[in-house]
Structure formats: C-alpha cells, structure tokens
Length: 124
Image 1 (cartoon, rainbow, N blue to C red):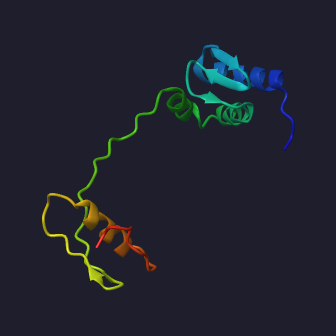
Image 2 (image 1 turned 30 degrees about the vertical axis):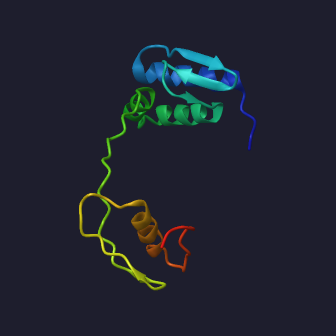
C-alpha cells in the first residue's frame, strides 16, 4: 500500500470536483475521515478513488448519489413457509397462519439444517 499525501489528494479532488460540478466542494476533516458536502464519511483512499472517477468523467451521477443519503427499500417480513422435512424422528407440518409456537419454531429451525441437531432442553 502506498502512502497518500493528504494535501495532494485533497487538492486533486477539489480540482476534479470543481471541473465536474462547477463549484468547490465543502470538505470537513475529522480524525482521518473526510465528509464531502455533508455526505457520507470516507477515508483518504476512498477520496482518491473518487478523484479518479471524477477525472474519468463517468462518476458525475454516481458521486451525487454517494453524497446524498441513501434510502434502503423497505422489506416486509414474510410468513414462515410450511416445513415438511423428516429429520431424526420428527416431522413438522405447518398448517395454520397464526405462526409457530416456541416449541414448533425450534423443531422447524433444526429440521431445516442439513445436519442432525438436538432440541433444546424442555422441548418434546
């Protein structure tokens, strides 16, 4: 790994950012982390990689998406699937939509594994 010079990397980034966006970036430095225009904190190596992307001209859109807060798509929990697997002497069949009881959950969880498992104490 080569040593990066902080002033060289930041000045090169400022020049590339200004050429791509038409304004100077607002860079906040805090204990080795750099925040550009209030976006996600990144290390100096990531700033250098971003500089290379900006100079190649392909990262104008991707740079804006990096500085904007990303929204994760909401995922909904799916209901447990019907489990019918024979393992070590017990068969689990899920028919109702109310969900598993604790005992049924452990049986289904351990039946889904590819190796033989023992049930916790007090279950069956």
